[in-house]
Length: 575
Image (cartoon, rainbow, N blue to C red; front, side, top):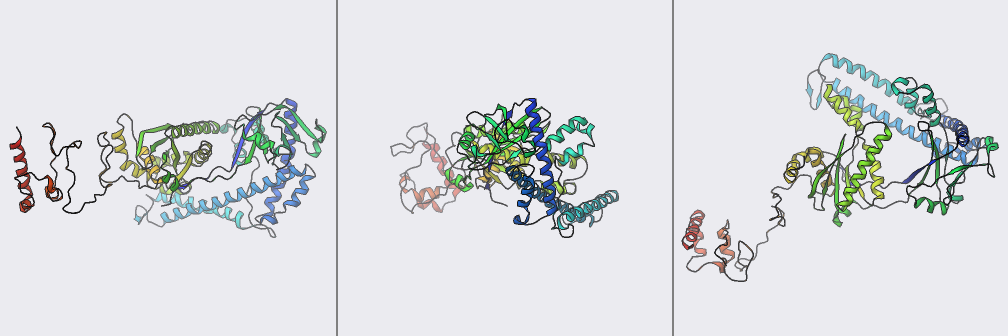
């Protein structure tokens, strides 16, 4: 089982503001974006043709000189950098696809090796011959796809290094929707607008020492004025000196307003991206920069400081959470936060942000030092889910549930928002959290919170937080129930009795608060406590033996007789 670890802080910042441009300014921005987009796609094709080579052999300087003729030196530098990033990302995706296909092929071959209706070890054969035949056809299809992927990775034309991924400028999903406009609920005109907007290139990399951190797209922090350097073929459209175009609108960046002006005034690098949204007919300006590396506390340091943690269990339709103290004890009530991940992508992202905002508010209200989550990854389940998650409607429903859980987006959103709120995110191994949480924590949580419906997901949140704190998930044996009269007492097995020297005297034990007198019954209404082991009491406290009663000499009598005599003497001595 992997140890818990602290999720790294976000490495950059990205903010957005709207550009309220006129129709003429929108036409100029569209012309610039289309011209630079054609140049960038040409450079991307050249980079893919070069193949997988070392960083110094990708001929970036040569490509940049070629692009400078039709744009500018800084525009060309941004285009070559974007082409390299797209190529490396596509190559990593190609490697991931090959690994996924190999896992699926191994899973199907293992089940085909077992006769129908039988089981060999942990591998179960298919139910009947029809299902087996369908899986044989699927295995052939998977091997064909794997052969194509391996050909892209390991082979190439003569004289060209290997590694040629397929890249669609504008997005493969949007390109495929062109052939299914009715299913995508798009018309041909609307699809063309989205396609052209995705293929625009209006990205200007920042430069330290340049005016306000960027020479190509300059934004003045005091006035919000936006200046854009035009490519050489479009310099005739300039309305400002040195081939620049000035927009009549201004920007202010209301989000994180304090950081952006400080960085721009210090002439530190700030990257700007002009984005066009054809569905709303709006233009936006994004500003981004790299953040300083932050050193976050480890789980051991958080445990040493005695901070609380908020355990969170991510599910398809809700978040189950519970607050734990530094000793691993649940405090407060179990919490349930609905997600409602339906609708378009922007709406789902908004619901996710709202749920994370509630989590952060709960953590701040309970003075938590961090939030504990699971290090979830369903790559294996998505690759071999048809072979390992059951058959029929139940298996299909489970696979749909797994595919609908936004694990990566939730982790990325949470770590950024929690970092800005001053909280630490700790990820733990997700093994058996739901099973053990429902087995060991569901019933105790329900007993403590009878007015709340407790599920096994709340128990899983407790298990996650305990694992992040370094405690075992299972409860200790003999833990007493919560009661205000014994809340200060420790549970069974937590305190260790250290016996004193034999023959020494100790203070008399009483059933209530000790008094200054020497009697064990100061008042007639006080109760007497019969200790379970009178032998140990008589040996350890010889001073408390009453006159006329034999002390250690009675040790040879049976224990049951001594208890009966004690009860009889108490009855005779009562009025």
